[in-house]
Image (spheres, rainbow, N blue to C red):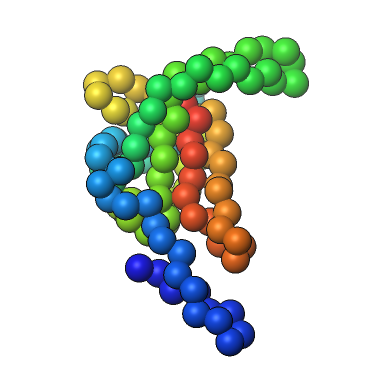
Length: 123
């Protein structure tokens, strides 16, 4: 359990329980583009204690393109492993033999101004 201190107050902020984070995925961070225009990625990392949910969310870009999210991954800042990952657009997550591209990673903040978990939209 993580404790945050406020003047004169000791209050706990509970992480998402590991029982609600049953999934494991493989994460590849985009490192650049090679001379032929192909995307290059860093070495794959196994991400444990996350949750995947199917999603049906539409988002429009500035050019009017429609992005249909296929899934959302929940990454807890305390219980997911490894800690400290930051998911960026175009990074790749593989779950259940399917590759997903990160569209956006949105932090959900605690009342004390620190991220509690991230909701990663996947296309």
